[in-house]
Amino acid sequence: MDKIDIVENNSEEIEVVESLETEAVEVAEEVASEEKVAPKRTYRQPSYRSNRQFGWESLDTVQDDRKNELIQEVFNLQGDDNEVKIEEIQDEWNQIHVVGTDDRLETRFERAIERHTASKEAIDEAIERKKDLLQQAEEMKDSTRWNKTAEKYKSLQSKWRESGWAGEPDNDELWAKFQEVNDYFFQKRKEHFDNRVSRIEKAAEIKAELVEKAKEHHESVNWKETSSIMHNLMDEWKKAGFAGRGTDDALWAEFNEARQNFFQRQNEHFEELRQGQKVAFNVKTALVERAESLKDSTNFEETRVAMEELMEEWKEAGYSGRKHDNQLWTAFQGARDVF
Image 1 (spheres, helix red, strand yellow):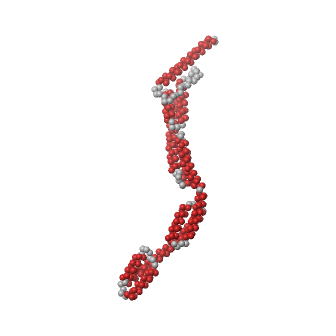
Image 2: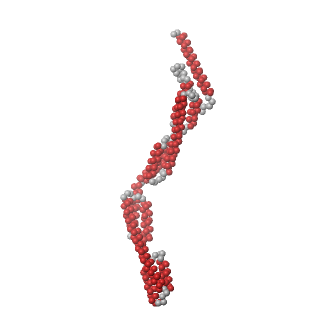
Image 3: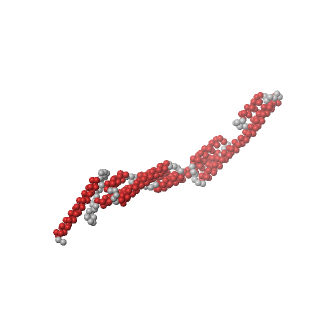
């Protein structure tokens, strides 16, 4: 082929390419001019790439590429609370999308939006669940029921792990607060058990002293004063705390034995008094009746001697109790006064 023919052929191809380029630009300008809604953000211009046939890519292909990019942007949001971003993506999609074309892309876009919405709902639910778990943790952080509360905290931790991702920044912020409350309780629990040995030793020392004091008074007959002492010792025993397994039981056995020895003797003493008062009541009741029978006698000397004898018996009868003694005395002395 002559050089002239080659030049002519190349000129024709250049004219075709230039014509196609001009046509593509005009189509793009037409599509842009038909849009009625102004874009909310600056969109990237279509990037035309050479293809095998003409050296230029069609506008539809460029738009499909951009649609794929928008779909990927939705997926990349990962449920973040970014509604402005979603609105911008949807606005751009509506501007470049024509109803009835590329149904597969339309379906993918709708699914991406649905997935984002579902992810956002899941995040909102996770936030509420974690806030509730945080509140429960805060409410029991000062508990001193160490073992039982520790189990509850472990249960809350398990539920926290199952509650799902709460999005950024809420997920990390809620976790930091939850962890802080957990650390607060478990640090107090650790300090409690670290000091437990010294507290046990101190309690054992205090209780050993209380045992000795109880033994000092267990033979006392000063019932009222010693009874008060024994009750005070018991109050101190309760405040002393746990003295260790085995040691605590042994000390309690000695302490309680001394207390029971005193109170048993006290009970026996007062039971004896009650029985004596009962006997005195019966004796004095009989003396009142005898005095009543003699009060009107005119055999004065003989009755005087009898009344004196009744008085001696009255003195020997003993105390008949607060409830009866004064009444019986009034009746007895009344009969004597009449005589």
